[in-house]
Amino acid sequence: MTSTLERPAVESPGGMLRGAARGGIANLAGTVCTGLAGVGVTWLAARALDPHAAGAFFAATATFGLGVTVAKLGVQTSLVYWPARMRAVGDLSRFAELLRIALVPVAVAAVCIAGGLWFGAELLPGRPDLVRALALFLPAAAFTDALLSTTRGLRAMRPTVLLDRVMRPAAQLLLLVLVWALGWSEQLFAAVWALPYIPTALLAGYALQRLRRTLRPEQSDTSDFTPGRFWSFTAPRAVASFAQMALQRVDVLMVAALAGLAPAAMYAVAGRFVILGQFVNQGVSQSVQPRLAERLAVQDTAGANLLYRQSTAWVVLCCWPLYLLVFTYAPLYLGLFGEHYEDGVGVVRVLAAAMMVATACGMVDVVLAMAGRTWWNLANVGLALIVMLGVDALLIPRSGAFGASVGLAAAVLVNNLVPLVQVVRGLGLHPFGRATLLACAMAAGFFAAPQLLLWPLHPGLIVKFAATGAGAVAYCYAAVRLRTVLMQGGR
Image: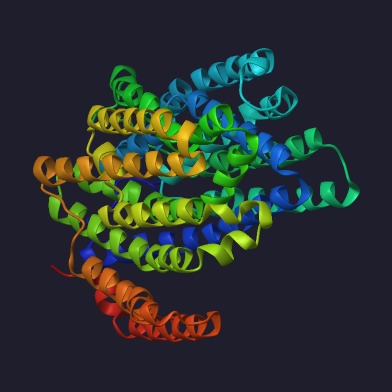
C-alpha cells in the first residue's frame, strides 16, 4: 500500500490556500479555547491569590516555560521542517531515524533541566516550592510539543488542536477552579496547573504512532536529510527558541527581581492579552508552516509568497480588532482582574500598539526558518533580547511594570522589522498583499476611527460601547462581503 503522506501532487494556488485555511480555521477554533482558558487561569490566579502570591505563581510558570523551551533543543521547528521536506520530495524512508535523532536528546535534556530547576530553585526569583512543583512535569511538556510538531510536519493538525489547544488548557482551568473551591495550598495550585501535560504527552505519542502506521515509505535517495544537516539546522533554532521564549517570559522575572512580586503580577495580568494574539498567530502559522516548507523546498517562490501574504491577512483580520479593543478599554479590561491591577493602563496600551506592528509583518520568523535561514533567525531574536534586557535594566527600577512594557515593545519591533527587511531583500517575499492591506484598513476604519472621532467629545462608556458594537457589526459584514479577496488574495 502507498501512504497518503507520500509525495504530494502539485497544488493549485487555490487548493493550497484552501488547505492552509482549513487547518488554520481548526487551529483558530482551538486557539479560542486556549486563549479563553489562559485568560481564565490569569483571572483565577489574580482573584484567588494575593498580589504577592500571584506574582510568585506567574514567575514560576515563566521559569517553567523557559525550562521547557531549553529542553526541546529547538527540535520542534525541525520536526515540522524535515518531515515536510521529505514529503515534498516523496522520500520518508529516514523518518524513523529522524525521530530517534530528535527525541532521544530531548528526553535527556528534559530530565537534566527538571533536575536543575529542582535543586536550583532557591536561586530563582519567586518561591522555590512553586518552581519545584512545576519541575516535575517539565519532561512531559517538552515531549508534548516535540511529538505534536512531528504530526504537523505530516500535515496532521487535529492532534495539536484537540490535545494542545482544547484538552490541556481546559483541564488546567477546570482543575484550578477545583483547587480554588477546595481552598488547597498555593503549591498545589501550581502543580495542578502543570498536571495535564502528562496525559497530553501520552496522547500525543499515541497520535503520532497511529500516523506512522499509515506510512510505508519507499526506499529511495531523494531526501537531503542527514543527522549533520538536522543538527546544523536545529542548533541555531535551539538558541533562538530560548531567546524567543525569554522575550515572552524573562521580563516577568526581571520585574519580580527588580521591582517586587506585586508589580510582576500586575505586569503579567496587563500583558495577558498579548498571549491571545500570539496564539492566533501560532494557530495560523502552524497550519501554513508545512506547506511553506514544501513550496520553498521545490523553489516555488510564488506559492510561498502567496501563503505568506494570505496568512498575514488572516492574522491581522483576527488580531487587530482585539488589540484596538484592548487599547480602547484598557481600564475596563484591567478592572476585571481586581483593583490591584488598575494601574496597568499604560502597559496595556504600549504593548497593544507594538503588537499591531508585529502582526502586520506576518510570520517572518517562520518564513526565515522554513527557508533554512535559522542563523538569521537566531541573530534577530538575540538582538531583540539584548534590546529588551537593556531597556528593562534601565527602566524597571525607575518605572516598574511600565518600564518592562517599553522594553518588550522595543524588542517586538526589532524582532519583526529587522527580519522583515531580510525576508524582502533576501528571499523576495513580502506580507503586504491586497488581502493584508484590506484587513488593516477594515480594522482601523471600523474600530479605531469611531473612537478617534468621539475622543474630543469625552463620551461616556455607553456611547463608546455603541460605537464599538456598530463597528463590529460593520466589520463582520465587510469581511463576509469581501471574503473572496480576504481568502484568496491577489497582488
